[in-house]
Each structure stands twice: as C-alpha cells, then as structure tokens.
Length: 127
Image (tube, rainbow, N blue to C red):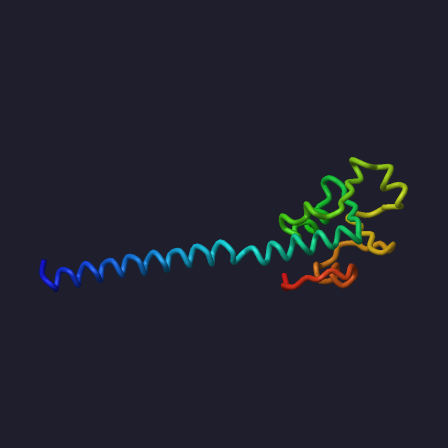
C-alpha cells in the first residue's frame, strides 16, 4: 500500500472519529438543554406547593389556563378540586375559581411572576 492510500485511510478515520465526537456532543447538549427550564418549573411548583393551595373546579377554563402556565409541573402543586372535595371548599370559603390561598390571603388567576412574588419562590427564567 502506498503512502497516499495510507494517508487517505488515516484522514477518513480522523474524519469519522471527529464526526462521531461532534454527534455525541450535540446529543449531550440537546439532552440536557431543556432540563434547566423543566427543573426550574418543577422546583418552582414544589416551592409554591409548600406555601399555598390552589382551589379549582372541573370544567373551569380559567383554572385550566392557570395550570397550563406550570406546564407539566402543575402536578407538584397543592390543588384542591372543589367538585371532588366540596366540604373543604365550603370550609375555606371558596367562591370563585381558581382561588389561590397564599399566606392566608385569597387571589385569583395570576402570572407566574406574581405567584413568585407572593410566595417568595424563585422563578429564575422569565416564562
């Protein structure tokens, strides 16, 4: 085998290995790029749940909107559905939906920024 063929094979190997390395780096970056935002929402919702309760009712479009702001992280919130637990809602004087109780005060639909301010929970990324 002549020098030129050896050099071509070596260059091909280097190109293939470089391509594999670049592909691996891209896969790693893409795999972890969304985690910060999701962790942010998960962590934010868990913090909010520690200091508040959200009262909802099945079929309430404003409640659906409020929960959508948390994306999949709404599952970490402290939520009471008044259709499922009417006595709790009567006892807590819930008349409108959604109703947030934060530090013994009632609030309606809010932005995540407003919820962060009222709860003292940190929302690192503007959503």
